[in-house]
Image (cartoon, rainbow, N blue to C red; front, top):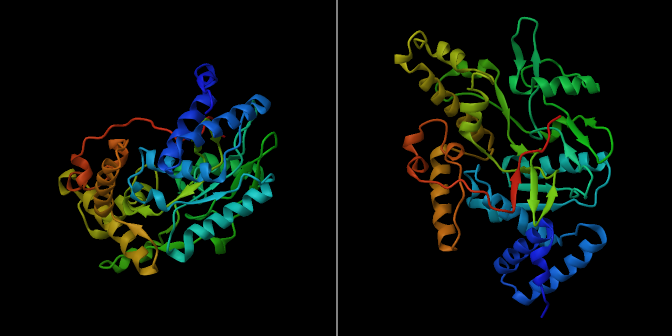
Length: 369
């Protein structure tokens, strides 16, 4: 047996390593004696380098548990199915870019989307880590016009201008895919154009309104968050993009419907012949349903994975029950879990939630471009 009493006075990194290793061995049903031996090795490695290297198994388990602990995500029932790609050996921006394109292709899977995470090298003590500047691997540019309007996605105007200063030039359309901007430690950022054949996009139409297709709308099939940090056992992985599939309201209610985004509710309402002069007509609500119906219909037509908010709500309740049987609580941010439309018609609306931070977990970037 090993004497681990020294851990009480050790730095936070080693304390977090100890907490995580106990969780890891408990959930892997491994003997407690293995924890002590592994912690002794980590302590010796820390004395030499002020950090340590996690095994592939520790990394994979930590990534899955981080998804399980993510209070913002309604789709965590599938946390055990996460495909973990250990890419800590890559050392150049070109290698990272190639791996990100591969991530997009593997996760998209011709529309049969599978949850993936690609984990690059951890941040080293006193140094900056690998950084992916994009908030998501696939996002559309926003071009500010002289009259104050925006062509494309207003949320990404600033990032679009950053890319343009780097030398990238889009086509100026509503749906120009932004390049990936990758910055390796102690190096300037580099931008890379994503091959168009790697990106699956879904043209949007409506089952009852032929005019909807004439709006020329589309959206990319894969949501892949790319600028959040993954923390496991005291180590920070600043480049760890992860992806699942969309819930329809993310596209239909937020990306396309929000006033500060594509702001399509007035256009859809006008095409529907609704009275937009009075709130009593509930024109926004009716237009929101049409947008989300179009998204679900179009993704289904193209054979692309997506989930409606009612199904996602039921799945989340099932997830809570499963976790309770395993003796675990489910941290959740009520404001992020409850769908942005038909909220009280979903099961999660009526559920009390505790928004606590458990580790491993994902955290916002420490600084922005």
